[in-house]
Length: 402
Ligand SMILES: [Zn+2]
Image (cartoon, rainbow, N blue to C red; front, side):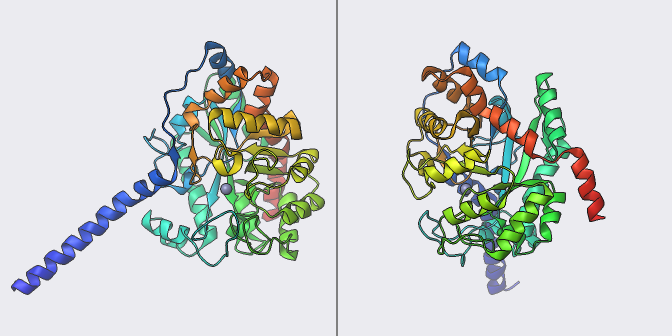
């Protein structure tokens, strides 16, 4: 081998090695830097709070854990959610949205739909090639990860598709098997790629909750952080109607106020705002008006209060609890739930294993046990038991599709 060839071989070898090292280390580095927990002394939970926490159904409406290259079956030393952490927190129900597109320079004021960070993330994390250019495939791939965990750990996790699925998980938990009820959602109906027929495809893949928007306007209408601030488009109206017929719960977190109003007029069933704060409590462009939130509640809807600064301004456990108190006062105790936005490129003070601190703090602040039960997950369980399709609906939908 000539000297020159040796140099070329060595240099390309080193470049390949550096590339491999980068692909090995970068996903964890990005994940760690994006999903932080503020450092704090271990939380002290009283015996009373511990006993109450253990007796409750705990649930959360929004954790983006499927976006990251992390083995959720093992307890990690970073990130906010994995199955062991959820178990330590006695969490019974967790909604897992799938994120498919997020604009460069993402902010709460105004984003165009012309750029996308998830394309790069998909490549760095070595997602399958089919996900590189398809938002639908990105959502389906993340869903398949959840299904794989379910297949490998059937006692630990059940992806719930019907109200009976949830009822069975809750019965099993009451009998001592701590199965997690996991619910699939997507963060932005751009994952449908403008194709109304694909609602059925996602339904078959287990999706039972659909969030219409993320940070930019899409085919269905305006985002709260987009450019038009418009309501539902004609296609958006058709899609929302179709979701409702299909038995899919609609989530308007991140939608423009005009879209929220249009949806409320259009649908018959209650809707969700999965992760948010209350504008009157924390006046940021991430939150919609209290008036509109009251309309969501009056329709029988459920509002998940987030754990991050853009939603609640103060992310300490006391800050979360003060946001929950405000929401209860404005919306009524039956309409308030938890919507952490764990792993949603957020910094929080409470990750999944630490959630008993909210029970502790609410007790200290004089919440009644009934209020704590409802907000920590009782409301979410009741909402889902009513809103999820029943097994007979499921059979009817399958017949229709055949
Ligand atoms: Zn979000």
